[in-house]
Length: 134
Image (cartoon, rainbow, N blue to C red; front, side, top):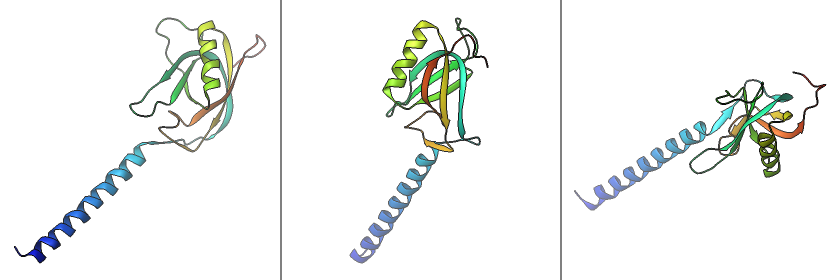
């Protein structure tokens, strides 16, 4: 092979490497996006059943809510992302006290997976009084 042929081969290999990188980056970006078919805001009444941080690199906080009083092995009815450390601390307080809460949330059309685990993100949490019902 001549040096001109080697140069052409190197250019082809570089172009192929760039194409593979672009495709891999696009696929990683697509898989890291959560999309909702029903964006909007709302409230939900229930009990905090779990506050967790999942992920390998980014660890978005997920706050889980159940409709009935928590028992061993309770299943999650709703899952939300957390907007701030303050909300996470408030959720932990209500998780420990087993107190019924009202979760106020915003539902987004799409969010990055490393930012929030779901498209519904808690904006505030407050205690639910006996007069509140689902």
